[in-house]
Amino acid sequence: MKTALGRPLAVAILIWLGGCGEEDKKESVSVNNDETELAERLSRTDVDVPIEEAALPAAPGRRAEKDDEGVEAEKAEKKPEGIKLTLVAEVASPFVGGQTLQATSVRLTGNYALVSYNVQGEKFSGAVDVIDIQDPAKPTLVSQALFSDTDVSSVTTKGEQVFAAGATSDPGSSTQAVLQALSIKKGKLGLEGLTRLSLSSFAGTAVAASGDRVYATSGDKGALFSFDRSMLELVKQLDLSDARWVAVAGDEVAVLQGTVGQLSMVDKKSLSLSRELDFKGADVSQSKNTVAIKGGKAFVAAGPSGVQVLELKTGKLLATIPVPAVKDLDPSVVVTNAASVYGNLVFISNGEAGVYLAQSPKSISKMKSEEAPEFPAQGKLRFSALQSVNHVEYKKKTLIVAAGLGGVKIVKVDNTSIEEEDEEEEEDD
Image (cartoon, rainbow, N blue to C red):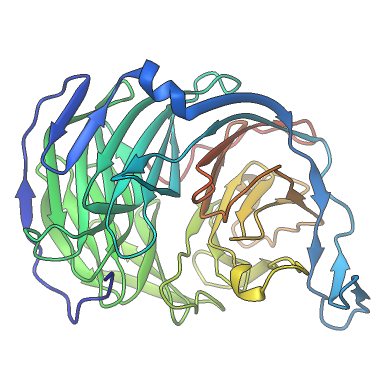
């Protein structure tokens, strides 16, 4: 059963060494770099993705309309304009031990998209995919790693390394929460230098890399961990309960904590706590919540409270993008678990409600940090078939959707309403 451990444990290191062939196996981890075989999981399409007007909860003090079920809601003033979305490919979820995995997170870096997977229920198994998106209209699945005893919740890459945070059932591991390291060269995963780092608590929830450091979080009575990236040794840890996501913001690391919504800003080198920024939301137990940093602002995916936009230095609430009003879904499954910001667009994953889009009149990164962004245009992306959405990442005209058991959706984004030029991203990869 996937349950929390009673208290934080010491960090242990298990190291496995393996080769780096076309199809490598080492104990519970296997790598497949056969593009012909992997192509069976990817289907190329050329299908328009309509953007429908979104129904939002009624704003306080305003007269609300009622839908066919009598639910109070008000329509967005207008839906996003000047944007064309095309579904160019779908990647089916992999199988491990005869069970379908669910896509949990996405990381866009350079010409590649990395996708993590885990499995529902009491069994532990997972995967990492590498998708070549150099040609956004013709993506290719180029590499895959399968874990027979480890869930993967989050993945990132830096240099020739890939890091995957998750949970394991391996009896040889001192904790359930782990951070896996693999090699990657020109998009191909390998088992050379395969390393497993044990974390406190029951699951590794997120991972980010910057410079010579790797930062990982673990939930419940967990912590923020800083590892030396080359030596893969623990440098320091900071106990932070219910840490759900980590993002690098300049000289700091932002850690989103749940139960009581809080963004802990931590010095990147010393791992000392700088300040705590409170926000409403992230109060659903054992749920996924993320934070994206852009233009001196934190876009907090706060569960039932939608997207909370905070000024990063002071924690001032600048804007809110609420969860949608969906008449045929229980409110408990309509929660915001991720938001991706680039240019003037914000793509939002709202669980079983799917993917939503908010459009600002100007690029977020070109605003002053204390400037409150406005999102007059909001809409829902209509896919023909979409499972519960766990994560979204958007950058440079490519949107990747981690759609749970529905695998991965790859969408080409043409935005003529505003220039897409953006400052150099603030979170390293």
